[in-house]
Length: 187
Ligand code: ADP
Image 1 (cartoon, rainbow, N blue to C red):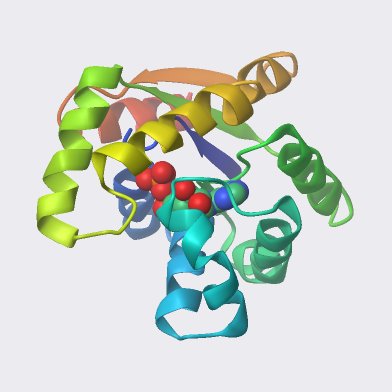
Image 2 (cartoon, helix red, strand yellow; image 1 turned 180 degrees about the vertical axis):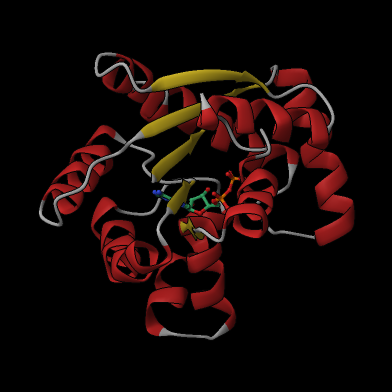
């Protein structure tokens, strides 16, 4: 199963991806987590992307595509990949299609978590207090929401055309959203 968890920053992709890892043994491929890991390890790549991330902007397609491609064999072995925070641009979606096709696979399902903007801002403020992420400031979050609207939302028609998108209400409790995702996957 190659599953794309799709939605704006703060919609719950990471939370739900982690639950799916536990429930189904699939591999979570979060480009945000990979980039943060590169930063805390102090790698050259990590240093290069730090300022872009902290401002709320997208890092280059080339970088995230390479990070994802490196992990595809591992996900294949586990029987499932949960793409979380990737793809974020049409170019990334095309690159993913190509990389999967080269392995005789495809994106099987796209689950779109729908959450309204007021709730996103509330969650960001809560996470800022709990985790202290540098891009969880009001200013950077505004940029992230704009990046989502202009660069990532165009993926909705991209994936809808192939009939792969299932919409899930992301406003409920973590358990309720998990249950709705399970239904979407097992239907
Ligand atoms: P969130 O989904 O909460 O916005 P992420 O952890 O997915 O946060 O991403 C944090 C930051 O990492 C993004 O704002 C961006 O700078 C960078 N990033 C993560 N994934 C991508 C991607 N697929 N393409 C470009 N930049 C990315």
